[in-house]
Length: 506
View 1: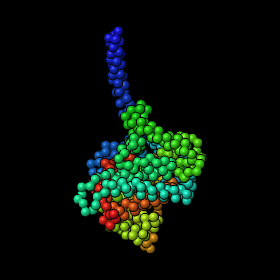
View 2 (view 1 turned 90 degrees about the horizontal axis):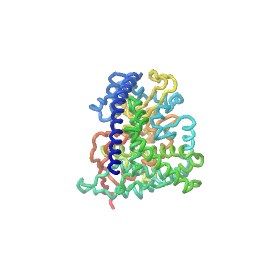
View 3 (view 1 turned 45 degrees about the vertical axis):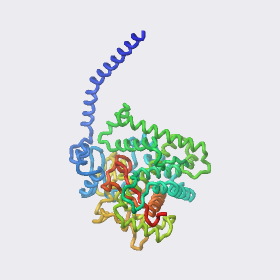
View 4 (view 1 turned 60 degrees about the vertical axis):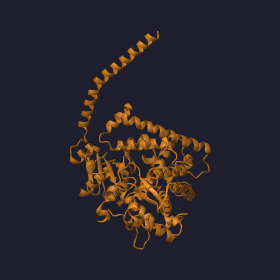
């Protein structure tokens, strides 16, 4: 009987395989033909040099990063505006256009439904992906909370504690003396900053401590899932033919299947954060999630808010710190100027008085913004300030990375890392000499980043503490190569050696 059962099972398996093979032979050619017809019928189909280079990635033979190629194209354009027709995308590095989009005609340039579709599976209706009343509610509430003295003091305490109790001891544990040969332990400083920033944002936003800043611990499954979800979501936005990823999502195959799994894990963590916060109580706590819970009962909405906090608090801060120390490794003069300012002020606690340090951070973000570009979708036909016509439904992108490299904006020395350009003649620090729209690293207009001051405080505190005690020696100081994602993340990490300064050795 067992032999008969096995024989029947084998026959059934072979029949299933034959049926599946017949189906594939019959259907695949039809699907391929359908795809080709759809591609050819696309109104955005274009054979121009820019679109061909984009679709074939031929630009990569001459440029290390897509953003560098786009920067070169924008420089060559008389209006600093270009079209990538296959994306239905207008890209600009013109400050007047940026002001038109982000302020003067703000209502005509929302995030838009196409953008929401691209990032909706991950970000839901969080503040970075929302428009209208949903966005207005979150922004108004977050702005009120972030500006309260209690939240500012709570955040400053968390940052200070995380630096003194975890970050500095960790760096000291792998540091070597300046007199030693360059054979010290190599660590990935980008990974360290991401762990640090994640600990901080979880404490500040959720009142929970994930304890990620332990290099002995493996990267959490959540962190991997979050990074995967960000990378694959970003690929959706860069796709020349969106119907391909939509088809993959429909049939749950390939990268979309991987994205779905990653988002499921992210959702599980977000749900656990909300559950723990509810169990601990939130009536009298300072964390941001507890304050939102007082007004929001929908767990799905809270989940979207949690994910947005994580994105804002971890990736942008970690990216800025990583690229800042890369710049600092090449400019000893700037590093020494920061130390001189510290000695003059006398305390790392007086962050608000460290004008040169803040200028150096802004100069680093000018050249390497944590978010290299941002997009809106035009609601109604419009004309940009440079005369570019924008058809309804068109994606319009302002390219912050390229704007930091424009001679017309920054002068002939635009490539020079010079913090002094952010200092006024009377030596009083100035955020933007003329207009925020020339370098919208914190966005600009009604959607300007409401966490700007908090993130600046956090980054200044980290730099001040690390520079005072250590020198960071970059193992590979070549031009940065970025990994795909929503923020500027270095491909391959940021390998460094940490050296103790002689004057601070105990």
